[in-house]
Image (cartoon, rainbow, N blue to C red; front, side, top):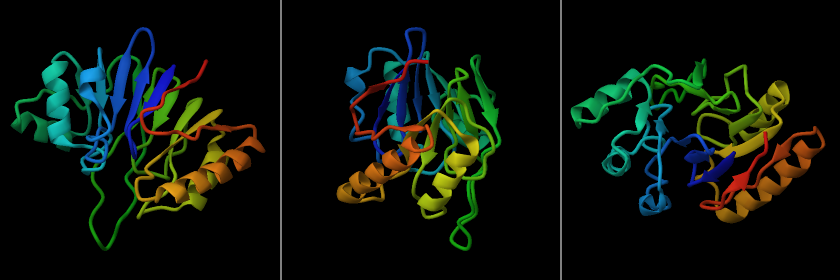
Length: 209
């Protein structure tokens, strides 16, 4: 499985049989070169916030890949329908949803409806949550947020014990801070037999399952 991060929470996940894109948000738009994509079967959007869902970027993806399935919440499906883009809120073949509620941001705003996605029984993408209780072998872990903390992210990973961790939701960090935290995460998780990948935008990594 080849995985490429495109800023924040956007992951391109490639296997010989299927290619999926998770959470193409506004921060990802400048990094994701659609012209370089040769295939796209699925687009998964965990919730409606702009850092996970950029309608303009999704529209451009659909223009190039009109047969791509789009899976999201009812709210996102309705928003896309207004733009003439078909989407669904039921899990397509090879995926399952898991309970992954968006964390509270009170009193600033109410949390949106959200989904967590288990993909090909291998990768779990929880969106904006530290309140889920299950993970596949590969966990896309939100490592920092207005609604959460790095400490909670680490505790959660130790509870769920994935084999591999992909850091997501870290646009808010300065690059030097990101590199420092990645080094700390890598060393800490290695002591618990978990491999932490220090992802860089646009640079794919390979995981043999």
